[in-house]
Image (cartoon, rainbow, N blue to C red; front, side):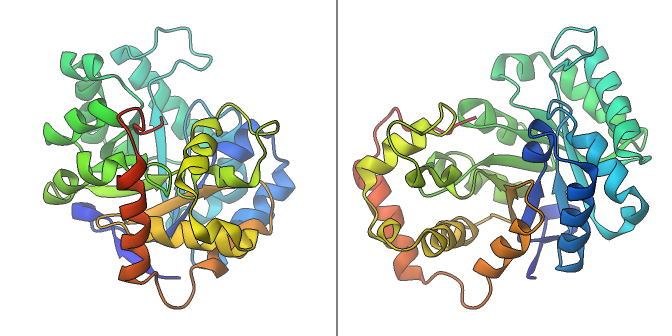
Length: 298
C-alpha cells in the first residue's frame, strides 16, 4: 500500500488508515478485531486512529495488537470525560484521559494525541494545550494534534502549536480544502481526512438515513454527481480517491468492524489515482452549488 510522509513528523503512514469508532460503538468481538487488524497490518496498514470516547475501541485495539506495537502508528483523542469523574476539557481530564488511554491500549506511548473537537473558546484559554504539551514532554505522546472542523480548526492551525490535523474532507464536505488545509500544509502538519467517503450517505434513502449522515445525504441530493449512479463499489472507490487526491491529505481513515472490509477498501485505491480532470469536475460542482450552511461536519 502507498505510504505518505505525515508532515514534519516524518512518519510514513498508509494512505488508508483505520478508524476505531465502529469497533468501539459496535462492541465488536475480540476475535473479529484481531482478525481485522492483523490482516490489515499484513496488507500495509500503518496508522490506527481511535479516541477515549469510542466506547471499547481502545481496549479492543490494545487486546488485539499491542504485541505488534512497532508495526503501526497509534493515534488517539481526548477531551471528553467518557466515564472519568472530571469536567470535559479540564487540564486534569486531559492528563488522566491520556493515562487511561495508554493503559487501555497497552502501550507506554502513542504517536499522536488529538484534542477531540475542542471549541475555539477553550483553545484560546490555553490550558488544554498546555496539558497536551506536558504529555508530549513526558514522552506519553510523540506529537500533539487537533481534530475538528470549521473556525475552531482554523484557529488551531493558525496558532502553530500542533503537529497534526484531523478534519472532515469528502465529496460532500469540502470547506477544509480552502479554510484550513493550505495553512496546515505550510505549517508542516500531518493531515488526516475523516469521513472520507461521506458516510456513503447516497446509499441510504430519505427514510433510512441516520441523523449522523443526513447532512451529507441532503447535500448529495443537490450535488447529483454522475459517478454516484454507478455501482456502490465503484462510487465508493471514486469518493475515496477524491479525498486522497486533495492536496495535503496524508491518510484517510475508514472504520469498520467487518474483518474483510479493510481489504476491500484497500483494493479500491490500487492502480492509477484519480485524474486531475475528474478531481476538478467534482470540486467545481461542489463550489457551484454549496452555500454558507455547508460547513465542515464534526
